[in-house]
Every structure is written in structure tokens, then in C-alpha cells.
Length: 181
Image (tube, rainbow, N blue to C red):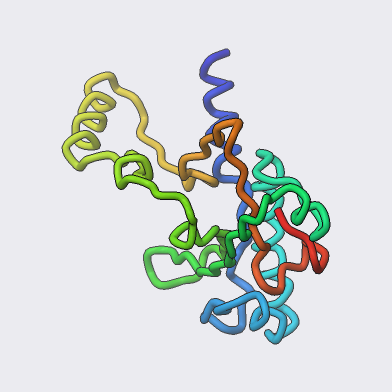
């Protein structure tokens, strides 16, 4: 039972990705506006990549979409943080395109809050820790596997008294004009 559940989780983390094999241009679009000027096949691939990222963030749920009138009523004069969509192409070992990938990021460097460095860093694994875990897996005769984890960054909840408002990336096809997250 445990083994089947673990394999299902592993399967979930690698199944959903947008293939970059059909791209005519191996240069990722620099913005969503440029993305819409691409060759029709490339546009479809990049649309799928953006929709995958948007749907994943929506399913967590990361935000709710609100109107500009709701923003004025709720925000108490705080300006919404801008966001952007970053496109990239992931490659196989021999420079063959594997995945077309978008990431939606909020420009937190424009946040009006004062944050300490310690409260904004994400935990990472040291090389020594990786070697230790690998040696433990070998010792216990476990099969090592890896996968690309979607939404791997820290997804923490905000305190109840904190609210952030975000302006969707310029050219976002999934948020109606004049809306915010």
C-alpha cells in the first residue's frame, strides 16, 4: 500500500509538463506580450505552459481574482505589487529542448513591508546532506529517483492581519482587464 501511494506521488510530480519539442524558436519569450507575436505553433506551446502555471497556482489556492472597485475598498490605500511571467526552456543533457515552462512571480522587492533576511530565505540542502541521504539510500538498498517538483518554493500562509494585492502580469490572458489577485 505504502509503495503504491509513493509511486503515485512520484508519478504526479513528473506527468504534467509542456513539451518543448515542437518549438520553432528556441528563444523563450521575454514577456506575455511578445509571446502573442510568436509563430502559431510556438504560441500554442507557450499558452499551454502559462495555463499550466496559472492553473497550479489557482488550485492551491494562491489568490482570488477581485475587481478594481473591490481593490479600492479592501486595500486601504496600499498599492498592489506588480508581477511578471518568466518563460524558460528546459533542456535534456544534449541540448535538446525538453520543456516549455512559465513561472509567475510577484516582485516582492517592491513590497512596502520591512523584512529581515532571515524571514525571507528558503531552506536548501547542503551538498554534504545530499551525500549523506544518498549514502543512506544505498546502504538500505533503496532505488534513487528524482523528479522536477512543481511549485517547489515555500508556499506559506499569510498571517490573518496581512493582505497582499497583486497586479497580474501584463498581458495575462486568464485575468480580465482591471482585475487584481
